[in-house]
Length: 449
Ligand code: GAP
Image (cartoon, rainbow, N blue to C red; front, top):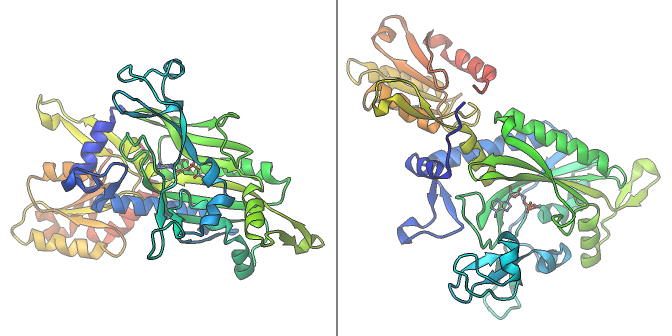
């Protein structure tokens, strides 16, 4: 497949077809924040459901949680975020631009030279990425509270509750999807790095000494997940964190990277967080967070944690980039020679089936509506009766609808419809009584072309 995707094309399609809009656009936009339109929310929900099924339904030893975004401020002292969750920043005294010191030319940084205008740079200073706000009526610092920068801590502080309420035995995991907030200074590349985003995290609690075994197991599992998601595996690779990249809590960490239009970038991380988090919460809260292993003579220990941490909104960007193709489909020398198509896996596509009457008249529209109605229970559907049929197919291709069902005069006679497949553009005639089962079969048999 010809990969001709650029970030400009993705941004433009995302807006044009209702996937992603700039936040507060009519006021000039809010940097670091994006809104998900009708197609975007469907795609995001489907990715989330896919992840949730994979991590909970298909793993007997993982349960879910939805912890609050606002947590006790001591959580972030214990977790090390107050002290360590910082980016090194420099400002240019001349052009006033701000840079991450680790992301600019290191020779220029050493000479304190601005990479943009050559002006003088300030000293490097640490900038904490957590958003602070205030809870309660008085804004005098006593109500300081943070917007969580990761969902993980909500899991750690509930680990004992979950052991007790659900009789979990080690090894076991807790999965959570939710918003996280970081005061990112560089927020270019569309929704790749934003100040408000969503994470899909799973924390797996294991006996010390078994951490490396489960670390490798979860690396394998997370790789297989992307195969199931139907993205091109040739676009993925592993990156092991070097000693200078490891987060303050990690003993070992690997990122799965995807080749975005701007190059290979982190998609998700698998981290061996050791017993750092629970030990710190035990110390800061004064509560006993040891696990009591009843099957082994009530042995007590602080579990090690293997974390799989994926960005939901970043995964949505990856799925969009991976699906995108400008494809030449004819050779007539006009713009109709090309189509833009999103090759989503059918389980991710915002619309699974579009029903299109060939004409509005002669009862075809009513018949098509009736067929759509019969599919609604099982599939997410769309109905479009406006314009030439070729144009309507192209509109559906642009939002990645895998199947179009066309209702024509023959349908009135013998009850058959045309099913048009997005990727091959092949068309087959199917009786409407067999439509649901043949679409389900096509979803099962789907292979990315
Ligand atoms: N709990 C561990 C943790 O948060 P991380 O590597 O900082 O680890 C995990 O983040 C994932 O969250 C990343 O791989 C990425 O997919 C997503 N992510 C992190 N910061 C993000 C941001 N500013 N915008 C969008 N996604 C982000």
